[in-house]
Image (cartoon, rainbow, N blue to C red):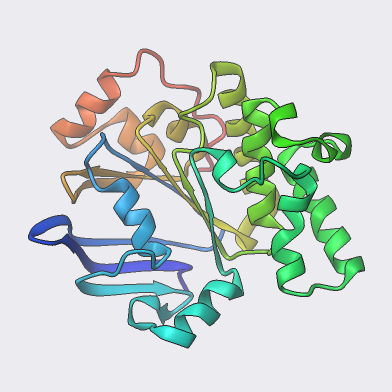
Length: 260
């Protein structure tokens, strides 16, 4: 079974069609990168998966359930289940600036009334997965670097043990050193969690996606113009738009982290 499947999904904002008959899938343990320039429909795609935007046609299935059909109490229950978690581009949107980082990380566990022993285990596992020290999370978000804050935001998403992690431009606001640390943390997370966790990573940075993704989906003006194994798409792009994106990146990071 796929973790996520979009089948003929279109999204309209008024009379403007932002996504046009999109079809893609994400399997358990797979990291799928979605790349495109601003205005290509990337963020709308993420919002549709999260059911923050409703598809005007097509199906959005998460673990076999068409979430586009959910309304009211059923939609609230699905959101509380934590099956899909979202990581913002700006981690300060998910971390309370006035509270220690640890409070933000465990907030979802408190809401779900997870027993203290289990909550402690989940918190420790999430911190280890993203390479954060326990002493760092006692600080306010302002006391962490940008990369540390982003890894804390990822840990916050992980503690509820989602099936799918959706990351929207997770490294675009970071400096080069912080960007590399976050990319390496995501690669390690992918390799450690295996089939327990799938990721949909949305970015305009094809270089970072080349380093961490198994498959690459290229989005242009609401259409998927290319979809294939990352190694193949980067080495042998089939669509002119994909070639232009690759040519705009001076150096593509090593693909050695990609699985065959």
